[in-house]
Amino acid sequence: MPLLTERVDKSLQGLLLLIGQRSSLLGLNTYVVGGLVRDIILNRVPPLKKIDIDLTVEGDSIFFAREIYKLFGGTLKVFPQFGTAKIVLNSGITLDFSSARQDFYPFPAAMPQVQPTNNLKKDLYRRDFTINTLAFSIIPDSYGKFFDFFGGLNDLNKKLIKVLYKLSFYDDPLRILRAIKFSQRLGFSYDDETRHLMQKAINLKLLEKVSREKLYRELELFFLEPEPSKNLKELINLKLLAFLFPRIKNLDKKERLWLKIEELGKKFAGLIDFDLINIFYLSFFYELKPEGISYYCDYIRLPKKRKSSLLTIIKNYPFILKNLTQVQALEDADIYELLSKIPGEGILFLMAI
Image (cartoon, rainbow, N blue to C red; front, side, top):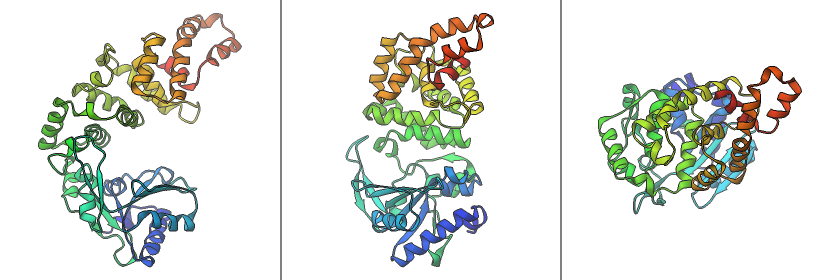
């Protein structure tokens, strides 16, 4: 399949060729897998500095990552407990290395037990959806060779989100949120069996078995999607938003606010320094008293810096909003002084409401 040479930027092409050559010299088979392969086929490859390349190595991925780091530099992080490594190149491109492996889940939402394998097919079978099981070889002898063991290309063409096996959502309930993310981002539907299995997992409340840190960090990825309001609306449709934010009222009436935040986030990106994740959290919390927000921040287990920023905005925004309604009587310096009490996300949130 010539797509790897037809639809990939020349500089990225050169990077992949060099990685493939070094892989071959070391006697390793290396493949580009997952999201980038999917995006190449869909002809929606992101800008270079935003590209994240997942590389599966039939062999020692940490050893290979260190060799690539010697070649290109950047920043290297190694995760020996998972057999993975990450390099962020100076260009902004991220390289994620993992050794081909099989995962076994002893019970729902458990950390998987990992077993190495030198078999690409077995490695791809542990992934979430068929559309993310596609792979290209990058070693010189088979550069660009396409692998599709599970019908992922057919599901891409049919615009379907499909799990690989019946216990997928039991093994990792976070795949429920990932199914929502991919369906909304790509405009895809769940296939009938996947929809049935996902609803069954929701009814069994399997997401309650996931640690709060993992659950809400996955939710935060929704806020960074191109159209986060669609993701949040789907959470309402599946009756999951009330589970994520218990005791918060009128969740189904916040869509206009989410759309406004979405619009402002795009409009002021690069002009104001702001934390988009915090703006979306504010959309849920802003009608609570500070003690209520403090409770939720601890419940969600937000980092201290994020919690501090949210509390600063909540404590100051009613006073600021009241005074800004008197804007005719305020000098520019007065407005500046008011807004300087809160971080950038607070300013955008005030604009949104």
